[in-house]
Amino acid sequence: MTFLMAFLIGGALCMIAQIVMDLTRLTPAHILVGGVVMGVILGGIGIYEPFAKFAGAGATIPLPGFGYSMVAGIIKEIPKEGWVSVFSGAFKATGAGIKAALIFGVLAAFFVRARA
Amino acid sequence: MEKKEYQKRARQVEPPRPVARNAFWAFLIGGAICLVGQGVQTALQGVGYSEETVKAPTAVIMVFLGALFTATGLYDRLTVLGGMGASLPITGFSNAVVAPAIEFRNEGAVMGTGARIFQVAGPVIAYGLFAAFIVGIVRFALRGVLS
Image 1 (cartoon, rainbow over the protein chains, first blue to last red):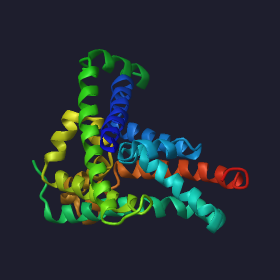
Image 2: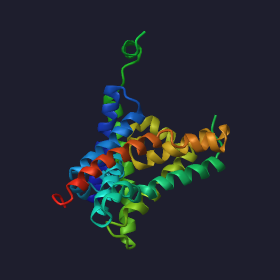
Image 3: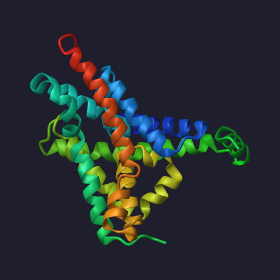
Image 4: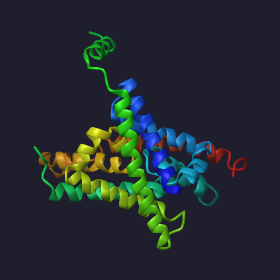
């Protein structure tokens, strides 16, 4: 069941993004920025958390889930760290993914030759 | 010519996009990637990660897979077919970082790889963090009201 939901919901989010891109003719980068901001807003008003509980990786793997993680990281730290969490919380929650991408990027640039 | 008018005319000469077909492939490929992500997450939970601690290692493994497929040139094909189905998942974020890092290495390690590595990831992180900052301030102000 978890796997079916991950496939269906994850696929649906990507399909919506694709349709919006085709109809508005925005660039992929604009759609990705819109997706992450959407996740931040839905996370902030408390909709994304129950959605993620129900859709699993279908909600957390697409980029809106990345935005949700940023906001969830801030909200989680507020009771402990106070206002500083508004600055530090988002990175704590998403830092692993961002750092992994940068490290693999630098490594790949070192070892892989660009294709013509 | 005004920018608006140029865009209008460009739209008229551009061939119409196969919206339904693109949507189908985006759904299939995006769904498949999320299915893999769920597999990774479930496997990690099987070896003792909790629902809370499983997020970061899942992200790292998915980013690694995205980087691997990018380095071998397979992710490009996935993007051509799947569009947002390949770009919206976190593996696509990985692709957006790794692909320019490789492509611009001949412009130097610093101004090529180093600068271009953030070409797409930069806007995503900048505006994501900015939006999270605004939302965070609101949630901080309402910390007594909302839990």
